[in-house]
Image (cartoon, rainbow, N blue to C red; front, top):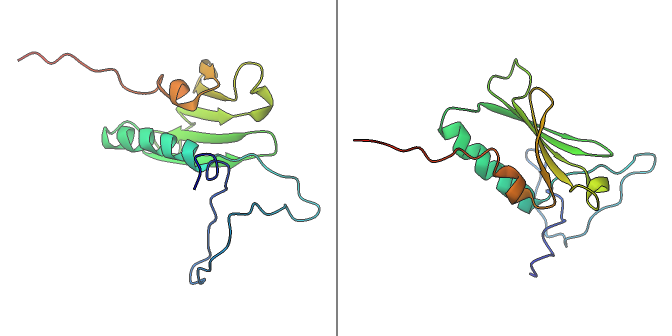
Length: 134
């Protein structure tokens, strides 16, 4: 498998009890009358869930939501599920040639970082190392 072959493939979810069958990596066309949606690919979700796992283990984050729309994909992070998201990670492909397709937005609406590379954009959310004195 080449490096770029699996990057744009959508993650396929199967209904409970459905049998798995060998299907080539084809991206299906959207059904008639439905517009295509923007979604995160596997590499992007690996990076996001890697950070999410560390922050859950640290006790900072507790819940998340993924929203896919026709113009953007959004990964929202919550401290509690009844609140507004603490951070929102957005993917907007139409901005990829301008400011960058990815951005991290704080709860107040402030854009913390924007760029072309998701790993660099997510660095703003990674906790800084702390000095421990004995």
